[in-house]
Length: 281
Image (tube, rainbow, N blue to C red):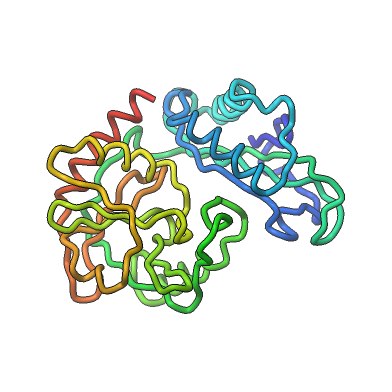
């Protein structure tokens, strides 16, 4: 089952107009959400990021889009797909109503919610070999729009194809200043000695929910300091550790970049604390 504007529809019968602006112009924002036993993990963070994204995209926020209403909508679709007593991955997409070309005829919105099963209830550390490479064919534009989760994911698609064709597990994206911004599917962190570093939002990285939680955790670690600053590609081979974060996988340690191989010690520490936050959220 899927939820289209509050109406539950069997997935094989669901349809959107060919004039849908999310399809036609990428005029849509979305959240990927983890739900555990009917409880939305980090719901407040997801809700406020969605509202902020809609405002930046000049979308009209419906009066009924309260945290309670949207939470109930998400829980309903999880229940309808028999996932209420297990774990689910939910995608909540908001798009502007159809009409117009580049200039919309209205800023009113519609929404779509889908849910699918997740294998594990909490985050597990994947210690399998994981190799990354830089994707240099196209650049992330440093700026506010790049921090949003919109339907404009062409660079991520092309980077994923490049990774698949060259037997890499992931690629790192760079901006027009040639700074490393993020991975194809998450935020990037480097560890060098006792410093944990991640790019700033001004470099164009996604304002990730898990990124925010990891920043909170690092600030409380007695043996490490946090640095939010631009990352040069040259720093990648000097780091002791590299890892990627997102809501679905939590933390993914990187094993190798070119000739450099990495440890996964800090990743293990952070993952345990991330799971604690997820349980308490």
